[in-house]
Length: 316
Image (cartoon, rainbow, N blue to C red; front, side, top):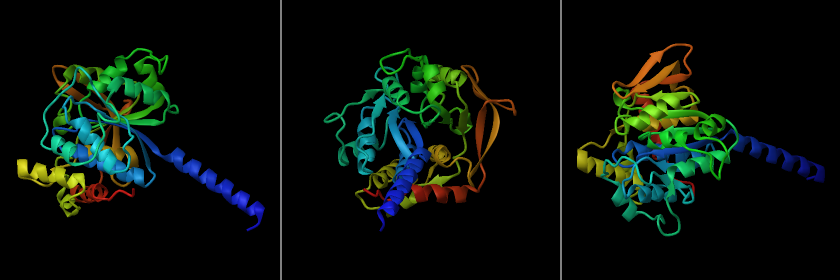
């Protein structure tokens, strides 16, 4: 090939790579990763998207103080070939609802949490990551309690940024995808003060999801090898609760965070607020800055899309 053509080809390849990287969704995943297993399914989806080049997982942050959750979370990231994804957690205040799978995953599958790396305090990790990103480039996905979001908004300037928490979020975050759960209040009820602060004071648009109860996934995880952690997670759930197909609240939030409305969803505008007395309140209206997510396709069709993303094997 002529030298000029080589140079042009190399230049075009570099441009394409830059475009590909720029188009990646940059996601911070905030999860309880203890009481339910849809968190695990959602994280698997993120790793599948990351293997495809669609997502950069900036951090995985826990909203629980459950002892084994950081180890289990690191085990999943390690299984997918991304052992260096930062892991954060609340150090003092946080919800702990127990887990049927976290300890087993932590003890069965490789991870180096506590050996070569340490858990980072959640607010510090949020501020460190956000401060290093381009403006309006980060999607925050919460599929657990809102403890960390409230603490971030209340945070003061520090070594990472001269901005307050609200200013930093306003500058760096594109939008916040929040899984509220059945009745709009499942994840909100466990740390109500934090929910009030997070929902009422978040300075950029919130996309919240509530559907997922009837979107059942998980059965096909049992087709995977025993060396795959998600097979163990769903088997432990089945042994404990006598169900293998589980509702997919967290997976729906994650699918939207990466794919947007696409063929699966539609958004309706309005305003989300929260009171200690009544919990989450939604007022539909074209002048609102927030959005509620609705499923566009059938529960069965959506379940197939989600489960296909959950059962992919890592590229490694």
